[in-house]
Image (cartoon, rainbow, N blue to C red; front, side, top):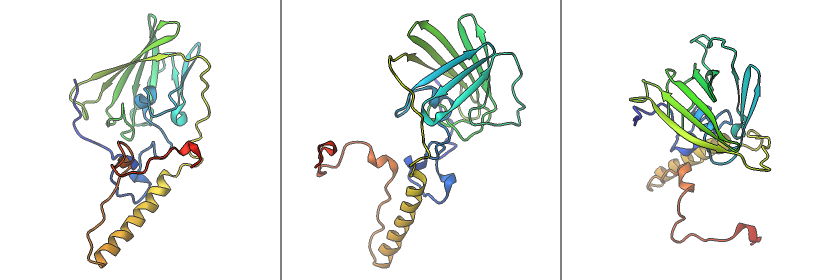
Length: 227
C-alpha cells in the first residue's frame, strides 16, 4: 500500500486558516473542480455520472462541480508536457471490453481521492461493464514525488432509475470565500480586543468543528417543525 510522502496543499475552509486571499481556499471552495478521482468517486452529494460515447470520443460528465472530460479515442498523442490542466489530458482506447484511459499533464492544485499529488502524476483508469446496471471503475495512481509506490482504487458505479442530474450552479450563492475572509477579520478584531483587555486569546475554530457530535449542553430542535 502506498503512503503519502507529504502534503502539498491546505485544506481550505476545512482547515484552520488563516484566510487572507483566495489562494488560501481549495478549488472545491471556489467551485472550480474536485479533481479527477474525487470526481469519479463518491463525494458529499451530487454523485451522478453520465457517460456519452461517439465513434472517436468518450465524454464523462460529473454532477458535482459540473466537470466534463472529453477523452479522444482516435490515437492522438498527449499534449505537450508543458501544458498543465486541472483534469490533466486523457487519451483512451479499448482493451477488449475494458475502456482504458491514460492521463497526464496534471497541475499540482487538485487531489486524487482527497489526497495530494504533484505534476508528475500519471493515471490509468479502467472502466468495464460487469452487468447491464453496473460498471467497474479502477484508477491506478502513479506519482513518485508524492507516494512511495503506485496504488489502485476500485469502486462500482450502478444505475439508479429516475435519477436526474440537475445543473450544479456552484457559484450562485457560494459564500465560502467571502464568509471565511470576513470571519478571519472578525477573529483578528477579537484577538486585538482580548490582548488590549488582558484576556486570553480566543480559540480559533475551523470548518471541521461543524462535524461530529454536538456539545453535551447543546439545544437540539427539529428545524423542519417550524419552531
